Length: 329
Image 1 (cartoon, rainbow, N blue to C red):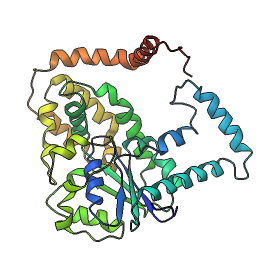
Image 2: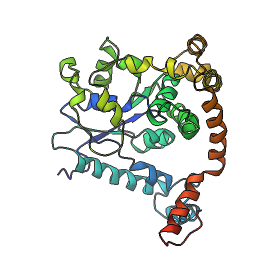
Image 3: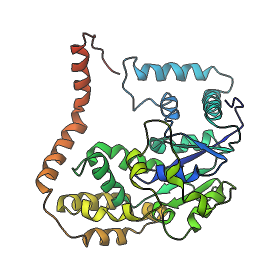
């Protein structure tokens, strides 16, 4: 066990879900000086303790937020002292999780997207990797992986909209800590992007060693377990599947609106061109096979976002177990 709190430097990989972050993490972990774990999520609840919105709980999160805010106001350094303690706590955990010769610990948690700016301020010494992917491929991957081919984008609008806004707000290309890479380039035949990624950490890239990234085993239940089992080498094949998945005219309309919402400026920061993506979408052959279910699920999605039926489901489960019901605030 490594107890030296400052013996490893965290590296944060920021991305939307289904952007290839698990593959990137496993690629980095082929280096002997890099340690990692599937997805830690440790900073999510800790940093959300400083946010009034976004959490409903039995203990009343908004009350806890006010109490923590009052507590921090009396600290010598104010809220900065509180955040510093969160940082030190995370560093100790990263160190304990790492082998003795590790130089870096890669923390890849996609839901860090809305916390990216906060994390960058909290860890000013940490290298940062922004991983981008064609938004159309991301949506298609969500449908295929988590929806089993059925429309399910309504479940991930927090990621697709709030998450993307969080990434763009935090992205600072001129910051020397920041390495911006596109998934499509990372898995391409040219190793230049992979060399740049490792070079950003001051590490040498060896194509022969990194070719065995599929042998990297990540502990924990989180992350892209399906992709880890399916793809045994760097391949662009997953990125070519989106056309078939998004062939429905209903899906194409939704995706067109999403691309227009992102806009030229933000897409350019990500490394993509709006007109090119729209052209690719428009030229995708149309299939009407999923249209009926798409329409039904889009209406269902509206109801889900409005009423969040899983809260009722959980309450019913509590009743069946003889538990008391509580108001969540």
